[in-house]
Image (cartoon, rainbow, N blue to C red):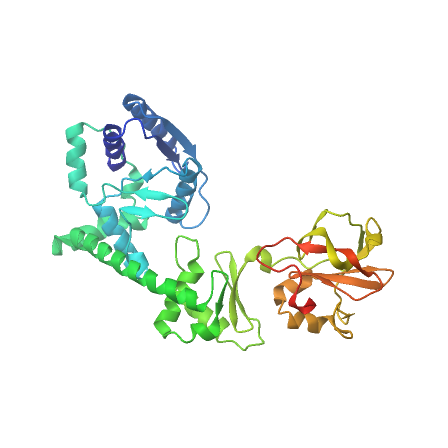
Length: 418
């Protein structure tokens, strides 16, 4: 009823600027027929209607259905569009109640915002201050047709259980409970906004979205550390990690021995301690398969782009680099096996490649991507995530060429070369 009332109200308010999206979760046999009903009502109101089927992943059905629904909405939203939803005051109170029972913090208890601006969409909930009874009365006055979903009464689902069993008991004792919980959500939204300002300041002091400086972090009080870690782990996700997950990060990773290289996996990222820094590393980057223990032969051309395990490189001219005679010639690219030595151009003498890697502070989870370029058993240089390290050899010459790392966030030549 609330969604259909919203459809009618929007058709009155801005008839030429709206379109409807019906999400078919395909969880009930009648869901397709419901889509037909919505489409018919839209035709009567002269509103374009989109029927979007989704596949709901395994797991918590309510959470997975919500995730699938929002992903589907975003497929049909243009940059300036606003997603208008029909949540009302009882929905708000139920959300706060369920989050309270799950142990949510300030952000969780702020529940739903009337105007919710996110990175990838803006949501407007114009009915959020209306009670269910007011919506029923309004819908009756406008003769709004609707279909009742039977799962709204299935107490196997948490929200339905809250609505059908818990709600009547609490309401009989606290008649104004719904309004009180809704008011609490607004107070929590104020508190969350203040907390976010503190967190932004703390993040500036302690690091960035990719890493945190542990010395700076540990200057904060324990509650601010927990809040910053929770917000930092959340990143662009919709929800923060659980309290237990934040505690695990503090005890298993941050408080681990400096040489332990402890890591914690959560929500597609690994959180790794290295050199008094806590790094947030995408799962795909952290678990990259080691290179095969074999060499390959390749050749380079000026201006060529080359994708290697350590990054994308472009062959460019350089005041000092490798001889142009090596262009279009077979060169050997080998994985690092251990025990190699390198004489870096501009440095005195050779030293272990392992030591050079450690001094450059290349992360342990990236070291297996390092490859050595050679010609006739002469080391020409080393491809690393920080760039190409030129080795001293008879092939070094003025007006030569070098592979340049094509990443703005990192310098092409390591500080080792300076």
